Image 1 (tube, one colour):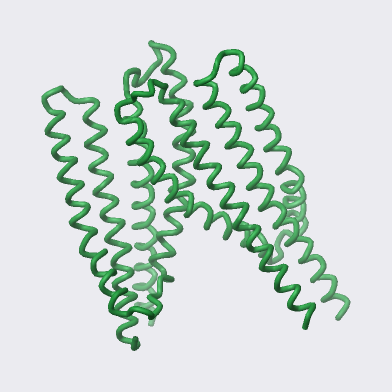
Image 2 (cartoon, chains in turn cyan, orange; image 1 turned 45 degrees about the vertical axis):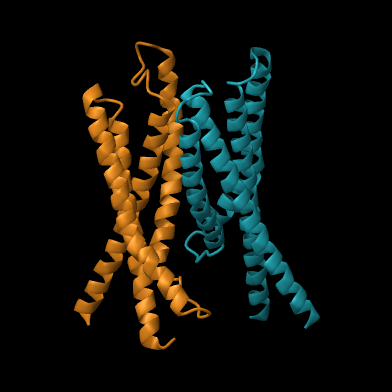
Length: 169
Length: 167
């Protein structure tokens, strides 16, 4: 029975680790996408030659975003399918971090929209609407991904401290 | 702070959140009138601007008493922890989360939509300024947030009623 308990604890830990990794990788992937959108926005203000390079960079960043999240996502889906029907909690943590980051990003995006509406009220910059939409998308996504990343890091460091205290005891 | 005071504070905090949601809904209406200015005849623009202005004043009148009330409570129970965790706050968080996700999708949609503006025949709103799109996104964000908030809190009150009925 003891052996069985140890086995389930080990299995549980590996699931939690994959879930943790997926959380961080998602944050990183979203950050890559936000950079790709920023590159897309920048094409409006640079020369045609540089815009060509930026378009290549945009595609590269989008692929990087997918590559960053894919391994952890595949592992996570594989584990979820393997453990179908069992009570499965770790995704609750991912959801919790996502919720907190999204709530903070909602407030930030709203404030940023108000600022942008003020900046563009006379449209003195003379840039197309698409540029401003891309800037807002990029900035709010970057804010979301960084919040997501730091919140998941905070959780990890708390866990580390607990382990340390446990070791001391 | 005794139990009765705590209940009073919790009730006031919940009421504050609901009032803010109502204020946001009125603000959406104000933005709606501002957006409508881009479509109407030159003469009616000013009327819509006036309506939008008075609606903004109404938002302040709706929210201000609650803000002052909460401020007074915080002053009265200085040092005591005013409990911010509750069902209503949870509804605010869930509604904000939904609003963020949907706003993101909406902005991607608008971005895709703007591609048609390059072609004069396909363009839907060819001469609309940036302000029109930004106000539309702001109105969308706020309407989604406030409607989801009312939806979640409506569910809660229904649950309460059904539990009372059962007992």
